[in-house]
Image 1 (spheres, rainbow, N blue to C red):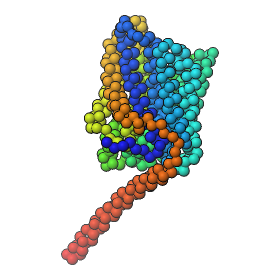
Image 2 (tube, helix red, strand yellow; image 1 turned 90 degrees about the vertical axis):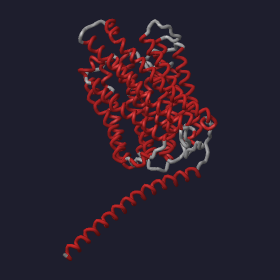
Image 3 (cartoon, rainbow, N blue to C red; image 1 turned 120 degrees about the vertical axis):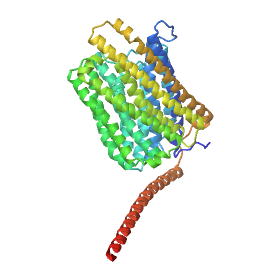
Image 4 (spheres, one colour; image 1 turned 30 degrees about the vertical axis):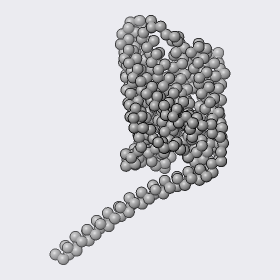
Length: 509
């Protein structure tokens, strides 16, 4: 096997972010399966109270993604800025601080320390710790951005840094408590909805573009043209589409229509990015990708699929006001949540962390086959779960809203679909466990590299080599374009010679 390598020390420090992300992802799959079982088989004894388990599930589903996003941001921001992150010491501090915060939050929730606000159940000091983690990340990025030599308008950098800023802006109001429940609910949706549909979308657009440039050879120029339009659509649609939640918490009904209309726009950014990739992708290069890149692209493709059909299309249908009045609070919302949060951002973070984790060395063929199996099983489990929840939710909406059945009668009728949901959860947990096991096994083998302390070093020589490598890549790309042009000229000359020969023969005749 090849030794792990990276262009910058900052990128090497991100290996442990990727490894830890897969560990928490595996834990989430197992705990979620236990919660699904408890919902169907109510009399089965459980060591964890249902409320504590639900809070654990909701919080870990956001926090493991935040941990992976942080590692991805440091890795690709360094790559796109073509220099070291301002402080590698802060990267290490950020990692251990986030890990400690995540463990304490999840542990306190299991022990019953619950603040009572959905998705924000952690105690106030722990919420402050999450905010501090975001502030450290943003500070390190800004200092790096201000001193980088690449154009400051580079879309990947702007997308990542603006998304990180919005993480702070939307989380900050949730540190406080509010007497009026409507105000409290509005700020809660700033966190769980706008973090997902604006902040992480902005970061994800920058990270996905950087990943595609690095892994598939997609032309930067085309992605740079589209990424600013994507950012404007993400920001505008993300903020206003949140309105379809507001109607149910006591604000004017106009917000329901605003949310419904702008939800339709949310599919546009990813479609534009997808079309740009298809238009500029070098298919010959794509066919020669290494197994690591192929699995990474499979995870990215999964994310794009669920973004279009699970988050955008299903979200659009659900948020249409005349439909939303029946679907709100049903299992249809649960299906949408799973497809939007894990389907979109979970798969994207897994793709980013997988690419980071396996930088510079190759796994054994058996481990790669296991990774392919895990990707297939994860998708199968998520689809089974979501379809079962959609059917159960549709029955809830119809039987409760139109037929007028009691909640007890409806729960009995939808029970078979909740059992199918459990089966889907088992399949999903199997996939997450296999993937986490492969990662943990390799992380342990290379533990001295993955968890190296690292320090602020002067890497001028490394940066010069990296710049040289980038210039060589550009020259290679230009040489290929010149070769294509020469081939066309040669073809035209041969065609012209043939026409002249034919003309001479006709003239002789």
